[in-house]
Length: 104
Image 1 (cartoon, helix red, strand yellow):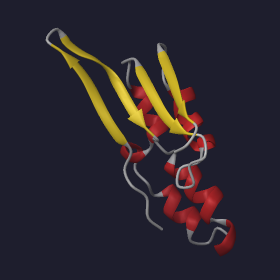
Image 2 (cartoon, rainbow, N blue to C red; image 1 turned 90 degrees about the vertical axis):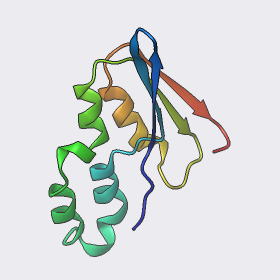
Image 3 (cartoon, rainbow, N blue to C red; image 1 turned 60 degrees about the vertical axis):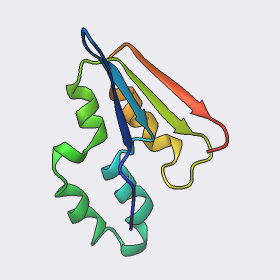
Image 4 (cartoon, helix red, strand yellow; image 1 turned 30 degrees about the vertical axis):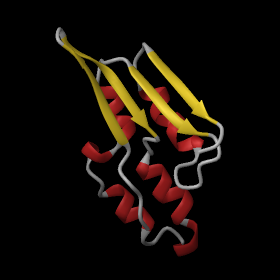
């Protein structure tokens, strides 16, 4: 199983940090359990998903920040389906925005 790390851009102005732009940030624990757990009866996926540290969980990190965020997601993405990105988007505090690209 392979996945690429989401692109994280910090928007910085001379007065300080202004916000985050996240491109396809997956909720990796849900993705491991839902997409890859069924074929091994969760015997491999469950222990692996439970041992992930909080620092790699996108939804946990989204809850910890108070910066405004823009989440970029592709509606037809095969690697990170929109359902996993929407969990992360829901965890962000306001103000938050979502940009949906139809062909990515």
